[in-house]
Structure formats: structure tokens, C-alpha cells
Amino acid sequence: MAGVLAILPQQIVFGLALGTVYGLVALGYTMVYGVLFMINFAHGEIFMIGAYVGWWVLALLLKAQVGALHPAWVVPLMLLHAMLFAGLLGVGLERFAYRPLYLRGATRLGPLISAIGASIFLQNAVMLSQGARMKVYMTSLLFPRTWRIQIAGASVSLLVIVMIVVAGLMMWGLHLLVQRTKLGRSIRAVAEDREMATIMGVNVRRVIAVTFFLGSALGGAGGVLVGLYYTQIDFFMGYSAGLKAFTAAVLGGIGNIRGAMLGGLILGLVESLAVTFMNPAYKDVVAFVILIVVLVFRPMGLLGENVAEREKV
Amino acid sequence: MALLETEGLTKDFGGLRAVHDLALRVEEGEIVGLIGPNGSGKTTVFNLITGLYRATEGRIRFDHGRRELVGLAPHVVTGLGIARTFQNQRLFSHMTVLENVLVGMHCRTRAGIATILLSTPGSRRERRRAEARAAELLGLFGDRLLPRAARPAWTLSYANRRRLEIVRALATEPRLLLLDEPAAGMNPTETRELMRDIERVRDRGVTILLIEHDMGVVRVICERVVALDHGTKIAEGRFEEVRQNPAVLEAYLGRRAGRA
Image 1: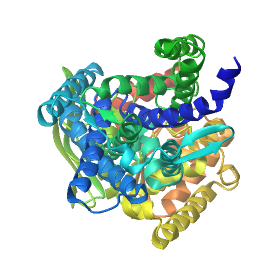
Image 2: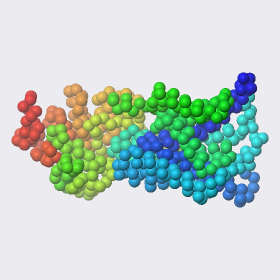
Image 3: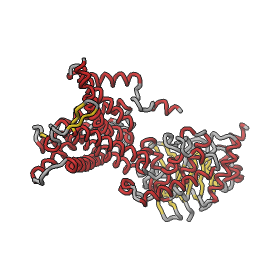
Image 4: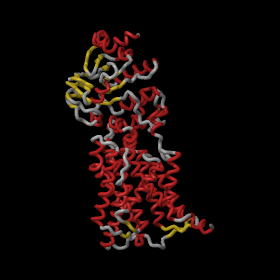
């Protein structure tokens, strides 16, 4: 037991890193659900493609032999490209895979099925263009193994700190955007009452497109961080990561932005603690048991709203 | 031409003709009442004007014949200067009172996404201006709304929520304001206050078309009344004239008068 306690601080830091990244990816699910009431099942693939874009940026930099690669500028460059590409991909998905359906008044299932199709399409597109074998992130070139920091008895690699800081800053930025700006107010207005928002002069289609861009960009950033952390990526990585992030979004209350962040953190911490205290094979079991228990007592998720009750008022 | 003019306006829902060959005219500066029994198509007319429904046939001309509204998206119609309230309350209940008004001002403020993200001095100045203007609009209802500006909208009383709906609609800077049963659910004191407020809004240069079941309100504030039944115009004119019209008596007022 003493041994377990010794590595506990370390596991908590890992959990935080994993959790903030889950939260980052979960935001994409929850934001899109907020404005469109649909689950964008292709979001996991957007995350995966973000990881590939980051890999390509790093690979091209190595090929160009620009000299010493310092994470202080390489990581932002990877993130920027991945976010831009992923964001535009999200906007494209919305434009061509979902909008034609919801504009013609399809049921909610229509865009959902379309999303599953888009997910399979993107997986295969990446497999065909990038190959089915995994690609290796040259993380060790950016973050030498010796770059470690002691925090409360835990020896933490700098990469983990970077993950927490980057994901944390992005969440904070999104929070400010949604709560303080005109754009954020438009997003909240559309989420609450789309018809009323349009009557108030809000261009709803544009708000939906921007929401897809933001959510997808955050997903793409998550892909880069996960790629750096696990150092291996493949075309199928979006499936399990997407499922985890979706779980985090549901745990926190789908449609609720703070809920997605909270759900991600809880999921990440639970997983890394489960690995500490029991057989690592059970970590997914623990995560989903927690999800089920929470949903039994709070079907709307931790911070979600009881929609049925709201409509009664 | 009038500020708003419809011509042969018709709306079918499947086999049901909700509005039939309607010619409606609203002059600048008027307060016009749209009356008729439930299901006579009044709210459908509002939905057609604001672009929520697309007319099956006919034209809707705004701004003295200069703009054709049929086929425009609702937010574009709002941008042209038409605002509305709904018969059931449709506030953004999780936003603050102030934020509800600010949403209405979006179509009049400029700041794009880039300037917002960079928080330029210009966008900050515009934001301060917008907040000052929102406060001024909230002040239209004296101290009913202004002291509660920072509270979530759902905490307001019923009458205050209805007032906020009007303020929020005014925030889009309309030339024409469509009010759907503004007095519904209000007590006599609140209704009297509302009538004064509607006249004050008109005196600010906003033309008003309103649907109302409370004939006391219609009689006092509407200069002209249009009566609908089964989607067709059955009478038009001053309230007293329309009230005497046999078709109206039969369709609507007659039944009411009979009961009273």
C-alpha cells in the first residue's frame, strides 16, 4: 500500500492531463449538441485528423532541417495547423453532411446516421491516404526525457504540464468567448431557442457553422496533445478517444460546456486512479460504471438540466 | 405605399388554408389591431411577415413598397426593421435581462469574430455603447426592469417578462413592431400601464401591429382594426365601425357580447 501511495501524486497529475484533454474533445460533442441537438459521431475522426496534421507539421519540420526544434514554437505551430484544419473540416461536415438534412426537416436520426457515415468515410480516407500502419510522433525530439519537474513528490514530465496548461487555457478561452462576447451570446441564444434567435436577427446558420469550427478546432488540438503523449497514432484512434470524450460530455451533462470540462476531468482522474489501485484492464469498466451510476441518479448528467422540468414551467 | 402592405397573401398547410388572399396595410406611425377568433390566422400572418413561414402565394411589401419580404430569412427581415414578440413567452431564460437585450442588438452592432477575439479598442467601445443603449431601453419601463438587469431572465415576474420581450424586440431597432397578445395574462393595472407603454413606443417612431383578444386594449389604443376569420379579412376600419360589422359580430364579437 505504501508503494501505491508513493505514486499517487504522479497518477493524479497524469489523470489531470488525460482529463483536460478528454474535456477538450468533449467540448466538441457538447457544443454541437447544444446548437443542433445532434451527436456529431464524426468528432472522434476530426480529433484523429488533428493528430495527423500535427504529425505532418512535425515531420515536415524535421525534413526541412530547420535546426533545433524547441517545443515553445513547434507545439504552437502544430496546434495552430491542426486546429485550423480540423475546424474547417468540421465546417465542411456541417455544410455537406448535416445541413442538407436538417434544413429539409429530417428527423434527428437523419444527421446522426450521416455522422456515423462521415466517421467511417473519414477513417477510410485517412487509412487510404496515410496508410493503415501507425505513425510515430517524435515526441522525444521535442521533450527530452530528462525534462521533468518535481511536484508534491511526483516526478512529472514537462509534456504533461504542457498538456494541462494548453488544454486548460483553451477551455478558459472558450469559456470567456461563450460568456463574454457577442458571438458567445449568439451561440447561447441559438442553443436556447433557435427560432427566437433568428427572430432577434441572429444568423443561425452562421452561428451553427462557427460552433462546428470551434468544437472541431478544440478536438484537433486534443488530437495533437494525445499524439504527443502516446507517441503513436493511427486512423482508428478517433473511435475509442471519441467514445471516451462523448462519455465525458454525457457525464457532465450534454449541451453544457462546463459539464464537458468537468466530465473530462472526472473521467481522466478515475481512469488513472483505477490503473493505480487495480488491474489496468479494468480502467474502462470503472469509467463506464461511474457513468452509469451518475446517469441513474442524474439522468441529465452532473451539470445538465432537466429539460422535461424546464418545459413544464 | 404604406410601410407594410400585403397583397393576395395566402398560406396553405397541406389541405388547410390558414390565410386566404389577405390584403393588409399598415401606415407609418399607426397602431393597428389584428383581431379575430382563435385559429383565424392572426399569428400565421405574423409568421409570414417575419419569415418564419413562407407564403404559398402573394406578396409582402415593406418600407413603402421598396422591399419584398417573401422568401427572406427571418434574421434578414429583422435586419430590415421588423421585430416581434410571441404569444407564449420566449425569453432566453438562462441569460441575464441585460444579455437578452444585447442579443436583440446584435444585428445592429458591427464587431466581427476577429475583432471580438482580439478585443480591439473599437470592439470594446462598441460593447460599452451597446450596454449603455440596452440600459436606456430597459429604462423605458421605469424601474421595472433596470434594477434587475443583471439577474437571469427566468427570475422575473410574469409581467416583467412580457415587458422584457418588448424591450428585447425594440433592441433590434425596428420600424415595425409586431406584438402577439401583449396583454395576455396581465391584470387590469398592468394592462393599463402596458397601453401607455405601447403608445410611448409608437411615439418613439415605431409603427405597431398587434394581435389582442382584450377588446378594451384594442378599443383604446388601435387607430385601425383588421378582423380576420378563417384566414380571410372580414372587416377593416375604426374599432367602433368594425364592432358593428355583422360579419364580425357573428364571427367573434357577437359570441362574446352574447355571453356577457
